[in-house]
Length: 320
Image (cartoon, rainbow, N blue to C red):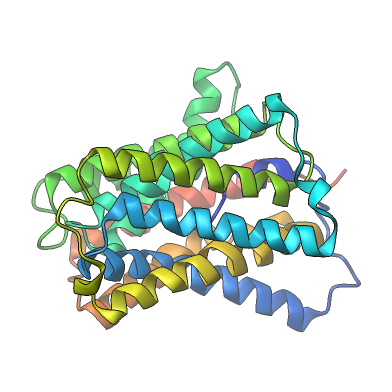
């Protein structure tokens, strides 16, 4: 899963909708390629990490704390350590958003992938834009009729993916249930982050979100006994490499590319990651981990992506 998809709500409030003529096309497509492939591949990285014996919440918490500290160091080096200062209210807001996004969203995905194929997980998480619309409707907003149709189509696709016997071999029921709730938590964090007093700098906000969310993951993971009997020496090298990949590429490189894209190209172009990520995840899972790709996964996944496409195309801001 991408680092802080909820950041798009804050960043797009000021991000230009039209393409920045100063942005070289090669750089734009390089950044898009990173977001497409790296964010899509994080599901594979998570699967390799947990299958190698890394405790899901504890390793996930370590991932985000390390990434947050690295990002903080970059901010301090490029600007000043004072740039990381936030008010108590901003810190509380970032902590709450980070807990919902990272512990509730990403953490549940890591636990679920102990029994669920990475491709199926990506397809279910692709429903985040649908749940955001549902939350908006519950809180009094009135999405357009086309948006509502897109949500209904996407939820129908999720129903196909969740039907007994329709998912890939080995998918556990508990994992499927967690993957239903993970995008809801992620959507709540995304929705909330644009409506509370967050730090003005989205990178600074991300630092505090990662530190807070990662800390909660560590605490909860330890409380549920993930460290009992855990021996780092028993984790295969592939597991440690996967965790390092998630820190450096999934939690820093892809996010930086995403924020840069929001500031330099049309939002409608950036939003295409929502269609591409699950396709990349399913392909990599089948290619590298030999995950089964059943007809229900293909059909249900296609319906989810179609619903997301309708929502994104009808909800994107229009030029003034």
